[in-house]
Length: 362
Image (cartoon, rainbow, N blue to C red; front, side):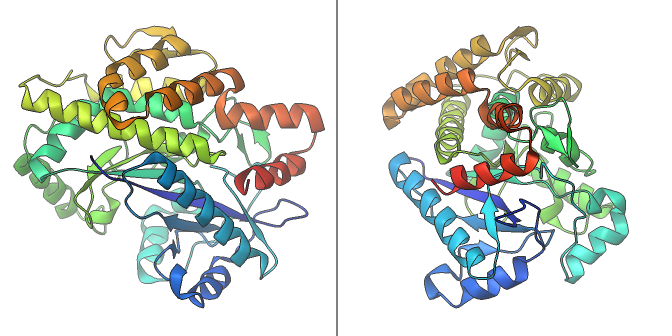
């Protein structure tokens, strides 16, 4: 069975006011004192962010347990220096982000200016094991149209600088400001994939291969396909759902490739429109159906994804849990819906953040 690992980016906030805190260096220093956590937590672009990565897992229960543990450990380390963590893909409250020190981050700040300063956005990246680069590229070619459904299910960023954006995933719109971000047309082979990456790096617009921000890419460090479209999820169960669906997509695509089935081959123009629709609507309105690129109710599109990967989910023992979690997200509107409901009930973005802190660590 294919293994799955998850990287989550968490927002560091004041436990009382909910305001983001630029304390990642102090939190990382505290985590480094625990040998077990030395390779778990990492710095990110902004000082208000903290990232962790799970180990590869075959079972979703084990993956969920590790996500919960890492979130609690992050909260413990943060608490020891006076802040805490929230699984929010953007800060609901106004913030002045501070870019981390280091040559790479400073190069990005100089090269991209305000776009770098405003990239205080937090995602969930899923790594799914593949047998080879050739299989990985075949998978990337075939999963592209379905990734927008993962974006909709994970949507958890309705607020930006103290205002409602009218998007469910505003993080994804901010992320698109990077010059290499977004969907890709079919590569057809690993050789063409690597040639494309080399050509992009040769332009000098990107510093290194780590800045190849495709929606799905071959990992530089692991034998995996890395899927990068999801907001960091408010509930750990949603992160597990995204991971299970990602594995299902990879396994289904690999089987299609072996059977000689061609990718759907939608243009990047259509894929970008589908991504915009998912960011705007989340799971509360309409999405573009991955097969037809025509509008349909979100529930219909989510069920189409479950049908598409149904055999892979069944064989992994993930189908029933995936159906239950999808039904719950369609009812609540995912993390974005929860945040908006909290604001309607409390009238306070501070209360939205502090309640999301509690959910993050549950």
